[in-house]
Image (cartoon, rainbow, N blue to C red; front, top):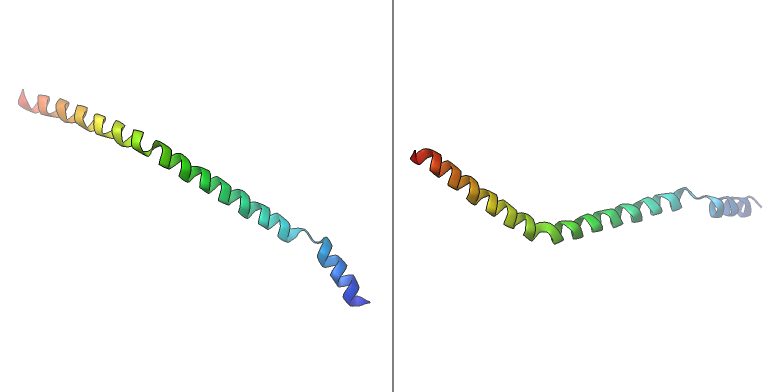
Length: 65
C-alpha cells in the first residue's frame, strides 16, 4: 500500500516540470539572441567600418594642420 501512495505522490509532484519549463524558455531566449546577433552582424560591421574611416579622416586632417 505504501508503494502505491508514493507512486501517486510522485505523479502529482510538479517541481521537475517547472524546471523543464525554465530550461525550455531559457533555450528559446538564447536561440532568439543568437538569431538576432547573426542578423545584425553585417550591419554592425559596416557601421563600424564607416565610423573608423570617418575618424581616421578627422585624425589625419588634425595631424596635417
